[in-house]
Image 1 (cartoon, one colour):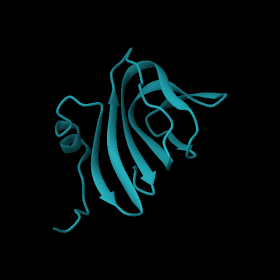
Image 2 (cartoon, rainbow, N blue to C red):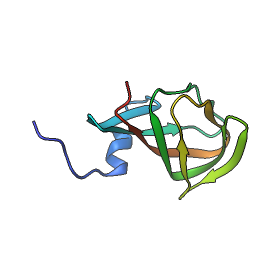
Image 3 (cartoon, one colour):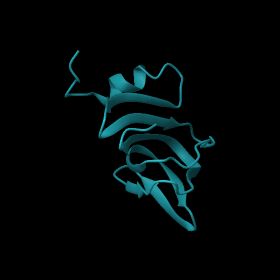
Image 4 (tube, one colour):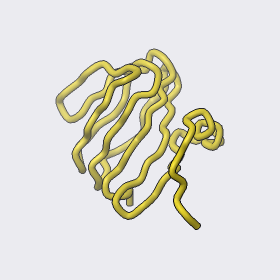
Length: 106
C-alpha cells in the first residue's frame, strides 16, 4: 500500500472520531496528525521523545514551552525540541493544530 500524498484538513477532522489527536501520516522519518482542543479545554500531553512542529490552523490559545509562554493563533508555527515540557492552555477558541514529529512518534 502506498503512502497518500495529499490531505484535506476538513476530512482529517472528520476521521478523528471524537479523539483529540488523529495521526494521518507515518513514515520512518516523520509522522503527522491533527490535534483539536475545545475552547476552555485542557491539553493532556506530556513531553515526547521526538522533535515536534506545530502549525495552528485555527483557534486561539497560549502555549508554554518550559519557561516560555506565548499567544498562538491561526498561522502560528511552533517548534518543540524532544523531551521539553509543553502544553496549550487558556484556549479561547477551538484549536485545530497540525502536528509533525521527526522521526516518527514512538
